[in-house]
Image (cartoon, rainbow over all chains, first blue to last red; front, side, top):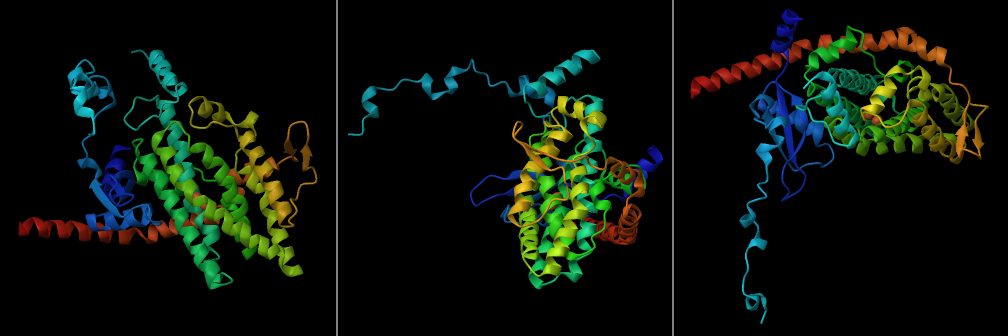
Length: 103
Length: 314
Ligand SMILES: [Fe+2]
Ligand SMILES: [Fe+2]
């Protein structure tokens, strides 16, 4: 398989991850991926594949191997919300009652 | 962690309704089953373009031609969404596609039947896409995130596919006696192969239980088949089309439509490669793949040269 496998890698167009902005003002979302020889064709393929019906008004394509991602093992400590740091929440603070009045 | 513990931990995530993502720990067998099932699904979308593509140049009107073109283009998109999801499991696009063109991978048996008249195009939209909707609506809740998300995207497009076919068939079925006959003849030919799309009966489907336990599927082949029949009977009645099954009968106790025995011998023959169009489909796919090779190479070469020039310039 390895010999065959290396040939496969060489001939395959690189993989691009596709993100699109569904509407004006909305954040970008991941759509999927496409294969393309260069950025220009990646954009074109992404448009034809993932935005045929106004699914997006803007598209990003990113070489898949350039994406740095957290790992599932990070789930615990990396994303620990540090709930013990209660001073990060507005409820931690008290303000004079009078300041909340409108007039 | 030993193997059993890992399996138990994975099963617990599934039972909690959690979604599995590409980098998550997953049993080898789960990954293998997904690769098999998803790539089979993707191949079906691609091969499925052939029977319909057969009629694009002979569509009865400009309107129908535009509709069919758009539908077939969607099917290409479906194939690409799913291939992109399969690749998250650590296989390359190339090995996956070459596996059905030159290897043993399968695609849906339904696409090994010929499209003899334009009525077949109507019936494919109504029945074949209708059956696909039943299956894919379930898969949109699949435990594997990328697969489920590709299904959500696909389901949004399938209702157009089904409706254009159903509408067209309704028109044909209310036309001249010849048109009526043509419509009914197409339904007669496609009905049983459509029921086979849901796969073999539960007691002959070794993968089903495992896929259900892992939350890839949530219904058995027979359950899906039954809900398809229940949904379709009244649709047929409404347009004056007869379903070619003398045993079709409403069961007041179960609330479902009972139906006759699916010709499973035919199904197994088609799976084995002996359907009317198996050889032709593979021949057409290989031809497109091989004759397009120089285009893919030229595009790669163009991209490489452009990159070199840019590097020199900077
Ligand atoms: Fe499809
Ligand atoms: Fe479809």
